[in-house]
Length: 279
Image 1 (spheres, helix red, strand yellow):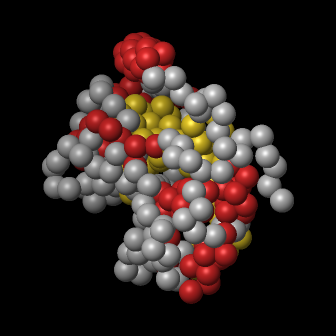
Image 2 (tube, helix red, strand yellow):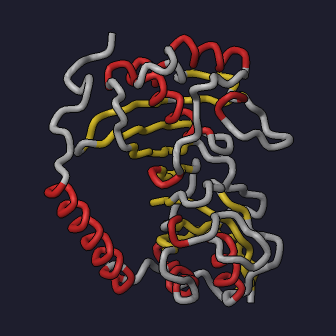
């Protein structure tokens, strides 16, 4: 047996769990990952997460790190997956340095899908641009002790897609609730409840405008997290194809329900500002 420091890439449906972060053997994503890793020689206390998403938030790609005692890393992906519940899928593994920390990502990409409530698209695009750059995010996050409230927002955009608002943002790191509060502020500006200047003022002073609320976790998805020099090991195995059909089945049922309801209550064919370009 040998000790291996391993990074795991995984996806999850946040709607199926009480939360993401561990809470003493509860029904959370981290709890289930640790339990599954214990079957593979997990060394207690070695688990670290790349992004600790809010309760109810899903991810296409997140990354964790753990130390395991095992003969080899060959086949660790299907071995861990075997002991995970529906809703968490391990998709890759790689051996990393003992001090490698998944928190030190070079890029994180989130998307948020919002239901329109009278917002003007052109106005929201201008509001998104106010977040570009390095800013004090005190007014747009739930702060944790010891974490720097200054954050870099490399990009933040909004478009209309299938009658919904699609937000996407890229950064090297986010604070707790930050993306959802950014979305909530932009929507408030789009509805005329605040101005772009109010976002700029909140970024400058750290004081939250009364119209800026926290958007629901249901629309948030962690698309990707990237680490410099991380290469996934082909010999670690891959997600079994048998894990995919049920996901497709449930998604298809949900899509059919949505299409049926839209036929009974048609969605607006035009969203305010959708054909306009920002100044």
